[in-house]
Image (cartoon, rainbow, N blue to C red; front, side, top):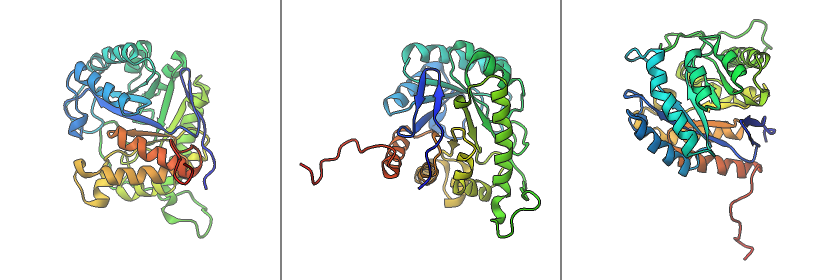
Length: 305
């Protein structure tokens, strides 16, 4: 069975292996790829946050701009959408941690000062100042991997041939794993050097971003290699294209495939799961934690009472 994974610490909360962490996706955008995640107003987003907290979310991840292609949203508009919601979530739900999905340092500074606990940089340090904001403001940061892709672009015929001199007999598909591990190790080290608490540095292989479906499947299969980096591993698998292509299903029918990938990654030690489906993910992770022996059943009376 996989060994225990790194502890995660954000603000004044520490999560051990007995508590898998659920990160709820709440987008303040009209064009997110999954319709139920679209919240065109702050009040709608706050309602979604309340539902996510009730369903067992530990973190809410607020986004003000679609990750993929779409209408231009400048930094001013992105901050206008997100900052008031960060402030209000802090007031209404002091027990929940707040993450903001942004790659822009200027937006990151605004949200950190509004009360965000984590900066989810899904575009792999495209703005190198963002990690410096995290260190200066005392918040966590997600280090991601996109294979060099630019923000809001789609992958096209990407390849990861692997490092020269690999051991004979090694899995030829591991080129993408090698690239992800090296990239995330360097990014995490830089974050720590800029003052971010190592337990507040998360690493995310970033499925679909700069990758094809074969790459994303192999990264789930090899989650343990990411866990070995020693930082909490974030998995953003929810309803992504690699799930849809694998099962030939549209976005609104990808829950089961997502949960299967979630269980495999959790078994290997991934710690944080970004999801559109909080209750189902919470139950899946709690079951895996109990099977691993990290957590006890909520109730165990069969054969005893």
